[in-house]
Image (tube, rainbow, N blue to C red; front, side, top):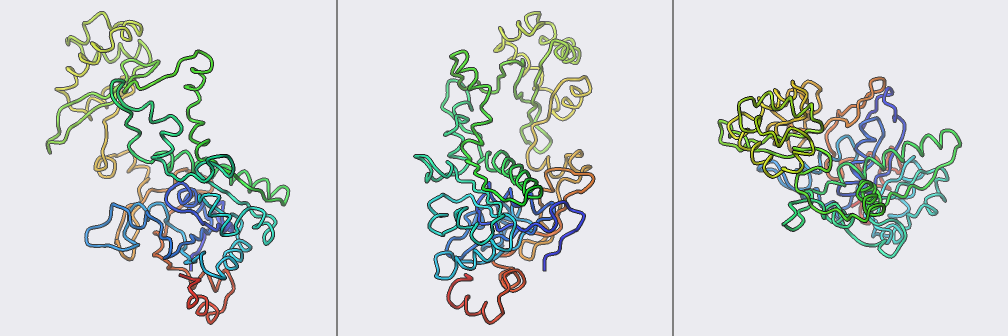
Length: 414
């Protein structure tokens, strides 16, 4: 049985997690890190696509091998419940009745078909906190549109801004809003609703329209359009207020990997620090680059000169030298760098290794927030598919083992 540490702030809070893929499960994972009992509802009839996703450990297949899924669902319990079967809604409502939070990122159409709207949940649990994360919201002409981060980034204007000016939009290369913006906003809203309930005894509905959550990140660009009539477009790595601001090629490492450095200079003082390190080079002696205005006016020449200087240097050593001189810079790290060579993340213990029944010892992200008084903790891997069905059905929902057997035979627990 899953146990919870009384020192964690969400101990005693139970979450009925009817979400899937990214934004919902990551929000649930954050709650689990801080002590919540998160019961992930799944079904063979509608398997979460991430359970089939890559990467997977070589030689290990099936629903339990996806590193993607396992990282987002650590420390949860898995309950199989086929909502398309007769009697499944009664089981779902029984779970809601015994929970504090209902979490879903399904479309309103699915929620309505299953009979799990906020009003319907309140009939069995008046103080439930129901957090809905449909991509386009619970109402409006696009409410039933489907999509993930790869759809949200073009819908909200982010993709239009990514890439070089003379090329087509490239997007952010991943379903970025799913990992940070949407689950982060949802967790904050849930915590606010929990505080409200503690003070008033009242639950409430949370509607996190993912499109609005992501659109909120576009604030300065929208202001530039509404106030100045400027519709910004792709600028590559260039910044509106920093120069130079980009990625520059360095020496390849001993394994032949490309090495790059990111440099972002926001003041003339920072530029002077970089120029002192580049003493004797054409970059340091070119007077066109002495002021921010001069660098902006000659940005193409500046980037070419800067690239020529960095091309013969070790990226990691250069980044350290620049940082020591007060210049924002970083080695452009890959997965190997972050996991095996990043001494900062290692010192802070961000990555955790847990033993999983099928994938063995595997890497997980640690809690995303450090609370020094009531810290989060990751001490259980992701559940196997349906691993806790009997446990949850008997210990949480109160069914007898014979009733569980009957419901399983009827396809409800499947």
